[in-house]
Amino acid sequence: MDDLEKQLSNFHIEKRSALKDKVTYVIDIDVSRPDEKIAILCSNKSIQIYDKCSMGLIREYNDHPGLLSKVKFCHVNSHILYSSCSDGTVKSWDTRVSGTNATQVFRGYNSNVFISLDISSNDFVVCAGTEKVEEDSFLVFWDARYTPEKNTTKDPLGVYAESHNDDITQVRFHPKNPSIVASGSTDGLVNVFDISKDNEDDALNATCNSDSSVSYVGWAGQNYDQVFCLTHDEGFCWWDLAQMDSEEPITLSKTQDIREKFSIASIDYVIGGEYHKNVDALFLVGGSHTGNVSMLTCSNKDIKHLKTLYGGHSSTVRAFYWNVEDDYLLTGGEDAQLLFWKSKAKEPSEKQTSMKMASSVHQRVRVHSSKSYRNK
Image: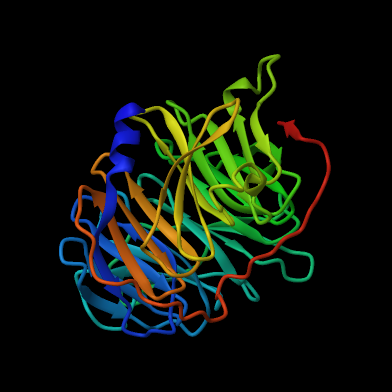
């Protein structure tokens, strides 16, 4: 942890890339491994691919009639990128190829509006979460394996329809076990499923209640047997699923509003979190509406401020990708900029002013209350 704090103390902006459309901002970021192409999801319904070394734009995909919610690279075949859209489709793209045609199109059912997405660690299964329509919200699953046929459209393998009763804002597969997936919803619940089971009832392993609207879900712990979430009203919850069969409580930490703990650091919101196995620590990334980026570290006793990065963005930061092993951070925000932070780097030219527009990902704040958790 001391080495990490030293790295963060030397973080500066090494590279800066301004989006060509100055009224567009970054909603999501992912990076392919090992070739390290950067994919960003933009508020103008486009996906842009950047070269990490030069931070130059390689290509752009614009074949999205609806609002985009997530981009995600495959784990094994790092050239393939997935995107989820409000038009009821998930699309895959071969980032080695330019043009507007998706490699495959995964169609949902009528009225599906996809607002979350992930792919299993072996790249076999794609899962997307939907907005609630009438009384229904779904987790939709597809076979992600490529079939070189003329018909590149795939129908779902099936759905889970009973475990959430509101918008499913987050889907997150286990980092190592391709059968385990967690989902988060504006109903306040974080559910954990084993999709190798025959039906939804048997698949539901655990349900944890955040008592608020879930905005982010992640995995933590040396064996990735912990799950955590952030909420739309800036709360934080952390559970240890390994404790479910013991007498110990599964809740490791719960904070109703992180902003109240860090008023001096001017944290206005929390973007997401990241567990780093080599230092066995869970980190959160937050920011201010003036563009500052703050790193926090979590324990079951407290949340501590590690470092605030100044002088980069001039407005709200919406997305990040933090690679502790290779010692760099990517951030994107409402000022139409993609920034590359690294230790001992030189400061670039002046930062760009904010160009805000309405977000394509709705921020919902709904407070719920019920039992703190239940086990299956």
